[in-house]
Length: 263
Ligand SMILES: [Zn+2]
Image (cartoon, rainbow, N blue to C red; front, top):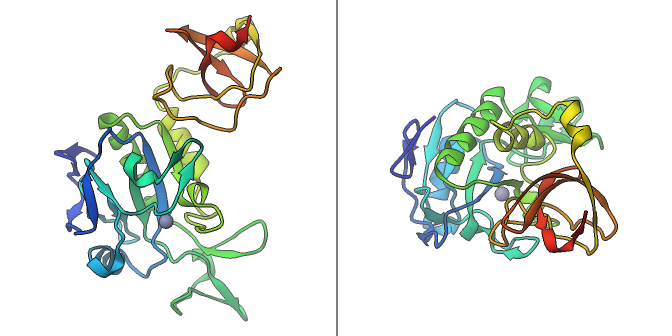
């Protein structure tokens, strides 16, 4: 996939009036959603309707086509009330990808139905650990989410991929347990990183956190926080260092201020 002039060249362009101005800073986050709708075209049409007061950048269909509704340099309206660590209102930091999917299903007898009454075959249903049925995503949708994210990462400084449920907990459930978010994150955010062999890992020096530390995706406070803080006293593996920041490995790796690390 390729992006030219802030549009995916593979996508059908259907401009939505639901957007704000250009991003003030380049987007570094991708938010994944499901449409909870019946088709790519019906969801795209609704997101192009002023009454929806909502939009996104691209919609990945079950028909193996992509619609683009808002240019990638422009703020779309997909996240709504949302927060991620120190940030609120994620629209101004993020690209919104909607995936054509009916969402949570209801079982009635041996059959599964969407909230709009369509019936689904068992092979289109994903049963969560808690027994709740969800509409399954297609393999094409998952692989093309990865491709779209990689194409975005080529152009914009993408450092985070989050589900809508992660930035609006309690209010939103998409993309839900049927979507392999960790797989997509790994394919996109770890792409091109060299594998560390066992030898180099054992040679990495250790350090102790002398404060609770924010773990950022890059060396500087302009980079987003990746996870809950590293607790004071935690032992971490030192991976790299530059400009007063040290890259450490916990369960995820990220950057902390060197001032608060005892080596
Ligand atoms: Zn959503």
